Length: 253
Image (cartoon, rainbow, N blue to C red; front, side, top):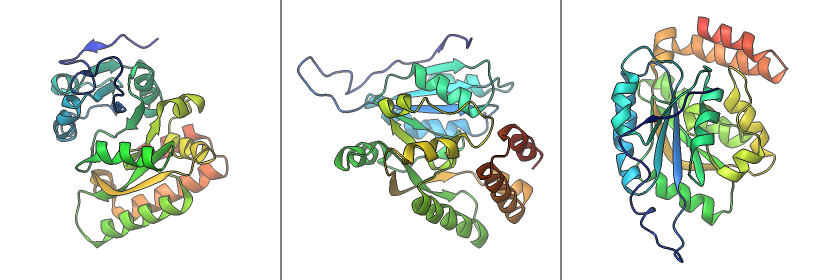
């Protein structure tokens, strides 16, 4: 069993909570962030999200066993802090989804920042186009033509195939996510798997705004080496490779 929530600084509040009976409040977004030893990055992700809390949305942190100061840093900046006894983003994100109160679930990596007006754009797009899920385009924090080209290719590929990666901040209406059974309990490629299943129900929204995600892994292991590794693993996953073995290869870089 996962541990009960650690109380955070605030609970759901703001304009959504102020609506009275008879009103029709706007959808609430639950931002679910899986973390593990992200003290160096989590503040940059959470601080810009504080106006979301004032607007009535919620931020849920799901920790996978951090040993640094991640929880201490995140606690005043989130509505719920959950501790998952099972590591892995899939387990953590499912844990957060079960605790969420929002109508829309937004799954955000700890080193990824959302664009301005993301909440309004997301709600408008889902409502106006009657879609069930979507994702953002991406760009990297690092500079240089190689990272720019990789971001371009990621964005092109996701628009063409309807399959997004976790770096692209996947968002989904809660009833649809629950109907899909959430993320598959696999240690890697959980975002690819979810996208595959979701796109058979709804064509995804691909919002024009871009999230900004850290290029740390690309820079640490080498840009083109990382590209080839990821494409090999995705191809292997497509042909039925064990996600557990792929996760081990990913960890080795």
